[in-house]
Length: 596
Ligand code: PNW
Image (cartoon, rainbow, N blue to C red; front, side, top):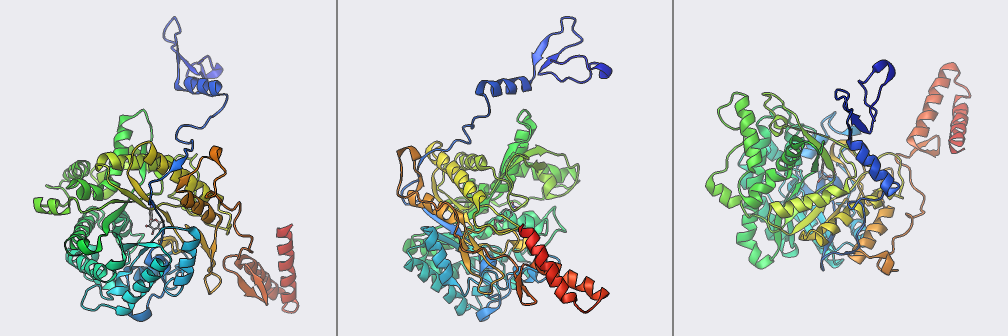
């Protein structure tokens, strides 16, 4: 209990119980820590919580099991066969934008390595493959004035190869590679883009539609808006109007989505019988302090401004009341007479509402939210009024923004069920990265997929969420946007130091493939199960080091070559003769001592 602390008297309370020293009876009250300690003693340790316990069971029949990529991240062939330039070609070729000046010029060369990609998909045993179409490959200047048949042919060949392998396509129309020609006239800021996007969608539905049953109009409007038009970390790289630009861009994206959906609905649905929707991404947010109502409100606000920004107009009609209220109040606080959030007309609300055939969700992680008053600042962040942090006990990944928080996926799925009247949900992305040395035995990814997919199973079996599909991001290590090739999300490792860019399965491949074969998690108590057959470790093939280089006829890692070069230069200053021999000697010594 709190007691006398010598020099400090009674100002520090070390106790599990608070003692009221102003009261002559010295009453004792247990603090929260007393309850925590009591539970530890009761349990004789730390048993798994309900959240952490695995459940066993199967997903729906005909569940969609998929893996995903995106055109700019894998295709390469940036100027092949009449392709136009995209804003990502422009952005990656602008000095200082991408880590180590990486570009998608070659990427995984999937434009020329279709067979390898199909072989990889077969190895994972997915039922579906999610890829995106490069708009400027099909329409080089973004408009239908000039349709690039060679570009269309590539996607036709890909669809044929997938169907021949009994893999169904999920096609994304827009995964961020806007034709540069359209950016030159204002990109997503210019509302004529709504028509341009509708026409582009029409071309794809007409030409590819007979072979496609699942369409995604936009991938992650939030990231397009915030990273591309508020922070400037993604193409087109704007950060000069964080008060208005995000709202204008998002407004046009939502309308463009709706128009594309209507084109499909009016012209193609009857004959092609597919489904069209949008993929929104969202973190899940918990209150930083679970004893503060303001933190609950902040967590709610975060999700409303993330998922809800797009989902509310499309699934419920109009912007969410939380978003409307916050942007209006902050606009007025800044001395404006009306909200910076554009309004939909009643006709527009009607036209947008209901333009979905399922709910496409990308999810990676959760955060802890709390409110911050930004005063009169006119900025998207100030409108939202929320700051987020992570819990340091959450496992890290190869990306700073991504910590492993499987529990959040189930909660987000439940939120979608309750908020948007239980739509069918396809998880169109979920995955984890590593960076640094290559280790094909990716235990962290196996753990990630096991834990996250198990939470999806709980959402389905215990919460009645109508989940119809799951997609692992990503099939291949690929260009991770502004961080280049350093953060690797792939089920397959792509050796970039070999010009052939070979794909090698990581251990997670056979693990994910077992979940797919079992359509869930079979109970080990009733086993063994034939479907559950993950290989204990990744292939024993030698692991190629990244950036292998030749130095004096030796095959060395970049690091070793640098040691050799430095030694060579240093010794050259002292004496030219013998320097090379000595540096090679040093190098070999260095290598051996590392091995030892
Ligand atoms: C998604 N964040 O992007 C994209 O759809 C993929 O192209 C990408 O490779 C993948 O996730 C992994 O990053 C995101 O900062 C980018 O929260 C950033 C965030 C989330 C998703």
